[in-house]
Length: 331
Image (cartoon, rainbow, N blue to C red):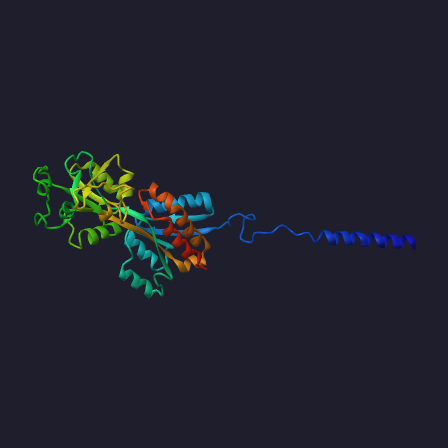
């Protein structure tokens, strides 16, 4: 009997010790993946398309995001052009649509036909400022400075003759009597639309203009033709300064201004050729896909840094912060 009582006492002691040990708190688990206190690991894909002008900036942001933030998220960035990008974005084929001009009324109407409202279901995000840059061949030593009016008249159809065979001497008599070769992006690009609508005032572009889809093609064409002139975003000029030169523009005060990160801006000396560039986000998809919303928030973090690196003037910290507040409100 004594042995039995001793055995029961020992068993009770063991059970009591075990129960006390079981009261210790287990380490907290991160239900979203990853270790406690670290950023939640995401996976999936984010699809971006649209503006070729915005492409270098968005591609740089996407590259850094996949390396430093979310290696299991694939961010695909295309450059079909602003208008072509909206044609994919409106039916929901892409998460973001980059644009080198603001969305048009007819595109907003198409969104509404899909049951989507701008400002609610689609968020317009201004990324940075771009300076429309007029470029010429490196060997051109006469047209390094031009007035805005001279540039506009050059590109207007019928301004000098009905065939639009314009010579440099038509602009200034002491310039060479050589025919000018005009180049620019085609109608898929917001840069073309900005130039046509805002710079030319919706007047017809010179008929002899050679319009291209790829900006790299434009760079190559101008670099090989002494009498060439073209227009595109400042970023493509910056990355090709060894092949091209930019024209300093006199906006009416007699002081020609070259585009630069110090002159591009709505209230800066190059304001006459400054434009905002955008990305448009499908907020409905962002609410369903955490990787889309997370990438959007990272854009606000990275844009101030990478804008300058890719040839864009960044917005103020307050503007990026305001967009971040909008993104944080998406559930």
